Image 1 (spheres, rainbow, N blue to C red):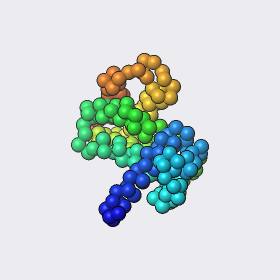
Image 2: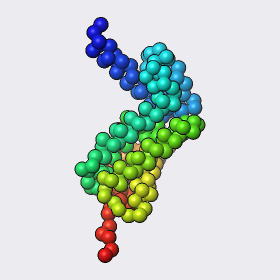
Image 3: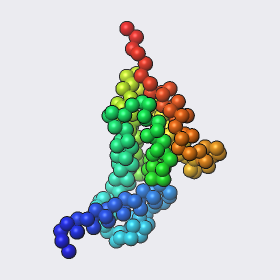
Image 4: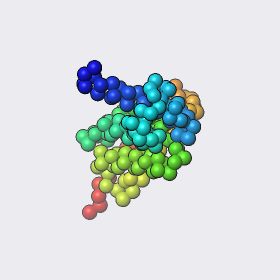
Length: 192
């Protein structure tokens, strides 16, 4: 086996562990998920979690970081406020996006992992503020309201199944979410 093939396998194994962990953490929560559950779902030896992620907490952190990285890629510095609702809805309505958001909602029961989760959410809110150019004193609070709305949307659609929200397609969600985002994050002219 060549060195390049080994690297490809290592990357595939690492990704399989991340995929299995995201699914397990989002579905069962941090405390109820064991490293053995994750390794079994990924089809690999449990010792590989330590090799690639050091610990369960390290794997949880990698899952959270990956979730935010996905959203960060969608909220690029050039995105406009008008593009933001459609971009967010695309991530909220897709299965992997829902899993990432549900993962962000799950408390780990571990103080260090929970701090990682809080930091991840704060960093995303800061990216929203930067993307919109909002300079209000309460800009971060407003961005966190947008995130709370997005997380509530996912919960109501997937966990609770409230109708007609659960059956709404992406296009149905864009305008109402746009109203929330625009209402909270539209920059207002500074008084002179």
